[in-house]
Length: 84
Length: 247
Image (cartoon, rainbow over all chains, first blue to last red; front, side):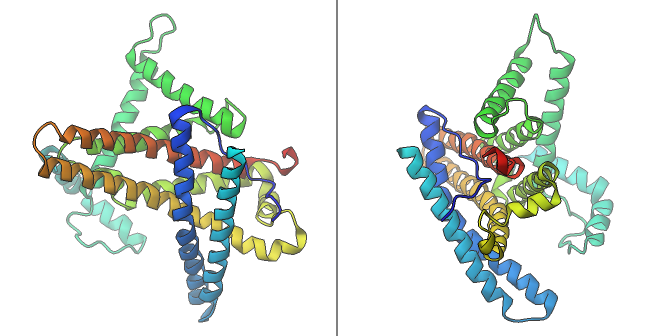
């Protein structure tokens, strides 16, 4: 996957704070996937209501899954780079 | 809940219930208790807001190069901390976003620390408060992204570097940005809610002196969560305002 040109690298505070920040960023993995799925569903649901359709929420759910996975990959890749 | 907060809430409801009801009605938001639209959480937020405004006014009035007092030292430490973080994340120590990021950090930290007072529910353990903060921060960084890159440049930034992938990446990036509101909200809310529960368990089930451990844990979570919220918003701001040619 090509790296997004606008993604900035997270800071690397030293010591215990750095460890905590890293832990919090890894905890983001647990949050981002369900959040992206819900956000995708919500966008699809609102579009369904607006356009009087009944299928866009499924597309939203799928795109939410993909968005969540991409974010997870980014977080994992950033963590890998930090470890190297 | 401490009696004085309940008293202030009653006072606020007595004075402002009618205009608040009218405002919520205009926004088509149903009000479950029209005589009491303002709750204790909102009162606590107002108190935190008041404390911060008072603090900054005091610092400004007593500003001195020769004899800085305690409040000035505190303000300088806070400013120095946020500036150093901005230098690491955004590459600019004097970015114009420092004041709002400092306010965000101070507001969340103070809200979180209110839970240390026995009998007071942390304002951020009510999902409405983190959601409001997340939405404000989200709107702020999106707006600054548009200002920094222009509307077309900012929309292009959602399309990724590969042209033929743009139709797929655009909705994905939009959803991913919207998910940030939710993840910021849930992270702060869940951590502070859990921290409140742990403090409550320590206070109710364990003898005297031991609850200090619970309070220490609450303080630790309060500081870390305020810092993480500020840091993530700084990262989002840096991403939104960065020009692609600078990478």
